[in-house]
Image (cartoon, rainbow, N blue to C red; front, side, top):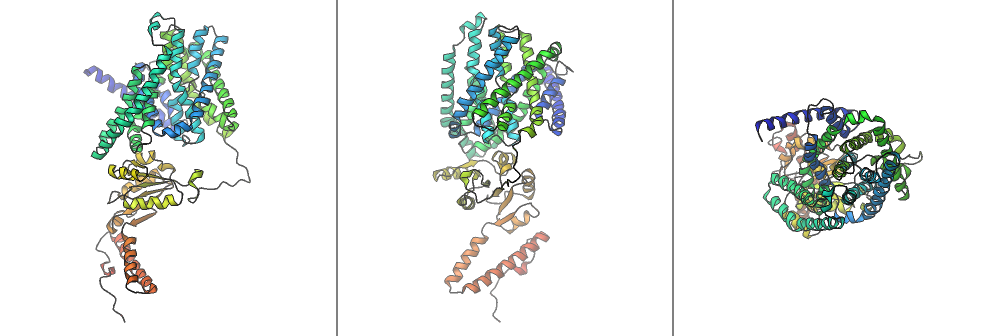
Length: 591
């Protein structure tokens, strides 16, 4: 890259990130969400308003990696077994939504505009797709992605991604461009898809898992990041080479690794890149918003965007009611998926190259998609009260209890960090009480041994905030740090408590010096790792020596009192030598 090119890159990056920072902070403050802030920032800084940054198409190509990384992260959260359980929603609800919405919008375009039937199909079918890049972050931020509502929304989005392949085939079949005659037929694209998915599954099982295990055993965290990005980009590149959806390839790669011990570590490592590139994607979409096209035909753009939103909301509402959802949940699902999607831009470009629509039409309908995306945050806010399920006056909503059955799905969640001797005992006690536990450890050998005994332990550094967040710490009722040694500092505990204020924190301390070092930390309990076991051993020895139970209890009480007084003095002074006189160094002389 020459000096001029580097200067342009720095200049564009400075302006894009600066405008994004201002607009996203403003829109977050107003409760409108980050997506709308990115879109408006891109529109303002782009060629159609201030003209400070150009070449939106090139930046969009790079930013589409954000969608790819997003689908990889979503795939990591869905094990193959869970995906199989969702097959009814994916193949049933998703199929009906795409077909019904696509035909309805295409019919409206054919009847009420001067476009040909072929052009109407080339425009209407892509508008049936919703914005994965917009909807999934909204579900994640609201904590609804793993709920039945979120999973149904995701099932529809996943089928929409799969439907890109037949839509490309339909547009190719309708093409008027002689150059498209030599393109691959639809049945061949379907075979490519099946073969690529099978290849990704095999690569995940026999190449990626051994690779991540090797990297984990070496303790090289930066290599984990490199390997994670390589996995995503390699899967996407394979699909792109076959003319398929890059996002689908990344999703399959994520699903293959979803039940591996490295899931949470991969999520945490990929998350920063996903967030930045997804933001750049929406900036690029905003830059591509042709305001002149809207200015020339404002009524058509507005009416078409409104029609799109109403038709898709109505179709999904009816599907939801047929699936026995409440009308409020079905309406919420319809509004959430009412916008056009980012893959519409890809399919409009395909239709343009097929000579089905003119370039200005592709730009016009791109503006319609962008406008519909911009309305989603407003629609969700405006209908919040309408969509909220009413609570009966006599109804008393029970809070979560730790003693509920884990099978109900309502039991308290707990994270156990460190699955050595100490952590195993803690985890088994919790699970014996039907509390679902997520286990995390950084020791590859320990993970392998635990797996032999049927325990699922995830790989990662459980002191990292991003990894804890990916593991569900925001929803957990307890986080128990059971690692060996002095790996936690008071500052780290403060940060964890600030990030997850609803979780009770419990810390295993190596010795009393570790307890003093954690002075002032917001923990519910600090447990010295050998204190209780040493007391139990002493009690057993006294019993075997014939000492009565009452005398043993008095001796234990005396020891604990001296120990607590000494520890209190050490906490106050910070001096390990404080209250040395409380150490019992010789037997009491009988009076």
